[in-house]
Image (cartoon, rainbow, N blue to C red; front, top):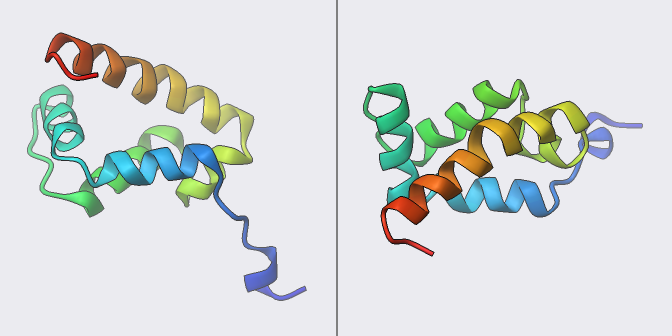
Length: 88
């Protein structure tokens, strides 16, 4: 099987992480919690990969431990931040 064929496809979590990586509000949250500026989608995506211990956002849909880290350290805190800022 080729490397391309072995590559995992992303599902719902990968899509969510990709969507958030492109949102200014997510960049602002990442900047706030890191106390360091987040300058765009590539930095936001790297933040997600680092926090979740993954090489690709697609891994979020295939690795239960990465999914748990995403929920604990990104999804829940970011949802709380959005609610505090009046976002839905």
